[in-house]
Image (cartoon, rainbow, N blue to C red; front, side, top):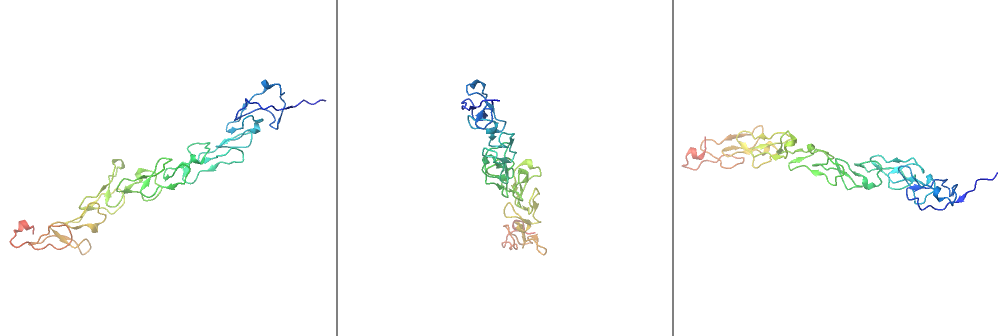
Amino acid sequence: VASSPTYDIHPDPRCKAGEYEPGTGLGRSTIPRWSLAARNCTKCPAGGTSAPQSKGIFSCKADVGYTGPDGGPFEPCAVGFYKDEIGSAGVCQACPELSSTLETASGSALDCKALPGAEGPDGGPFGKCAIGTWSETIGMLKCTPCPPGGTTLSAGKRRYEDCIAIPGWTNDKDWSKGPFKKCPVGSYKSLYGPYPCKLCPFCSTTEEEGATKIKLCVADIGCEGKGFGWDLGFTKCKHGTFKKTVGNGDCPPCVPGQADATCGGV
């Protein structure tokens, strides 16, 4: 019994990249050479591609961003992965630590972007937001610094609300009310967080804004003392003495002949 004739394949210019001519894919075709009209170019399965004038479905290879055997089926790389080469030998690669892709089927390492709490150029390298900075958006090249007087307690923070007032600064407990402010003269704050500044002890004040501890409270004008402590403290100047400056120490005697009311003694 005579076998069916076979014919040398004549490359079909109609088949473009991403298409193939149905057949065995082995270099032979059962379609007569003269019957070009019978040839149909078929698209590769989703996620596959081919060279121009390809023959057979097995000419379809996994495209960038996809994986799978020759001929398909092909699966997209999951979010957080990419594949930058064509072919079944390639596998989806995980993005570097602290980064991810925005969608499936990513075809380049440059699709990996810094996650919230991290910074770095697309593709890496990536690092955590340093203490005092934060990032809530994917793809940040640089993390955003906390406002003056604010910081974070650890690296890798993702929200503005993670910025808290440093010692010597305060803010309202309602984070939406904005910036931090220094403790005013005469007060101090030694804790991190949205706590109020505390007033210095009686007859004492600070020499400038932003005091961070009670030991920075010194004798006020008209007061004397050597500082804060168990056996120390501040009192008003005694009768016949007065101090016109802020700072620890004794009140000096009034100028001879100066009235008590003018001198300020009690």
